Amino acid sequence: LVNCQYSMATFSTSERKRRPRGDRKSQEMTMHLQQTFNAAILTSLHPRSQIDIFVEVLQSDGGNYCASVNAATLAVIDAGIPMKDYVCACSASYLGDSPIVDINYLEESSGSPEITVAVLPKSEQIVFLEMNGRLHEDNLSKVVDMAVKGCKDVYGVLDRTVREHVSQVGSSLET
Amino acid sequence: MDIRVSAAAKDRDTRSHVEEIENLVTPGDIITSDSGFMRGHGTYNSEDDRLLASVAGVVERVNKLICVKPLKTRYNGEIGDVVIGRIIEVQQRRWKVETHAKLDSSLLLSSVNLPGGELRRRSEEDEKMMREYLKEGDLISAEVQSVFADGSLSLHTRSLKYGKLGQGTLVQVSPSLIKRRKTHFHHLPCGATIILGNNGYVWICPTETEEMDQTGGYELNLKPVQRSDREVVARLRNCVQLLAAQKMQLYDTSVLYTYEASLNFKIKDILKPEIGLEILEQTQHRLEIEGT
Image (cartoon, rainbow over all chains, first blue to last red; front, side, top):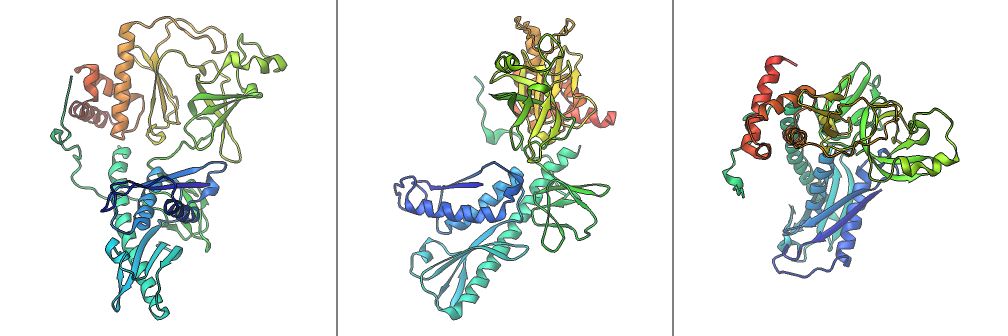
């Protein structure tokens, strides 16, 4: 069983906004995170146990879900909880006549469609896909491909960091 | 009062180059496509019969068994390990013990020595007297007898060296830092006993000078401990914390060398970063020379 909780600090967005705990947006994010990590974590190795993932957003400029997923992936790996693969998330959109990747808050609120994708990079399996706004179906595959490529780039960065960290700590363990 | 600014502290990352160690894998990495190997901890089978890693760590191979050892993990019990645990519940005919594993461990009533040391079948009165032997909050040292199907451990204290722990200090470190040795009970020459539990719990107490009676390990020595003994225990505790913070392997020799290197400083100074680094450098140097 994977239990998630998502909450945003009041000072995280450009306008200070009081956020009651458990409001609809947080609940929705929580559910999305839970679905994503249920698919990635090997929960069969933890019978009769609950794995808690608590995410607190300190500063946000768009891409909340993506940042939460990437951060939670690193946390789960650091804790030594077995996972099928990394989970990397990225957002993409279609502005003007070109697809763009990793959109910020301004681009999100400008009315253009937004696609958020979370994938398992090795097998290129999509774990989570969400779309806001209206997108012409001709452009759909281009935008999704761009988001998946963005996820692979994120994977490269995460993997390199994890390897460096393990090497550094592991080398002192060997002695 | 001692106030220090963190920016003024020396840069602790003395290792300038970070070479990637061999056999490093991260979740999702393919370890091998050969299906002849057995899966150990930290691996799983993908659909097309390849062996993938599920944690970030170092691959270890023993004949046909492949497992991945992560840096930080909950304790995975093996039969014969010495563990230190805290009683959390008293249930019908068994105690639930917390050992920093994925699930709580069980200590069955039939696996403990009865006080008084007699050997007989456990009766109804024994069940009712369970709370007199061990109640919630007590610390015990025990050995892993078996592992249940879901991964939880079954402990036993059927030897006189195991049982309830009396006056001393508990230090909690990561289980991967405890080196597997033949014995985990060490009587150090400085006058303290240290028990290195495989689950990462380390118990430090002053050495008992009298002979242990055949009481089955329930008599607690509650006499006030002398100040000199307490200082030895406190110093050892700081040394263990220091080794754990720098992620060095814990075993009797490394703890002893750290203790001896720290004798030049005051006990509370060991926790300061610069002094700690100095002590560790001395210890590492000595360990390399002795070649252990």
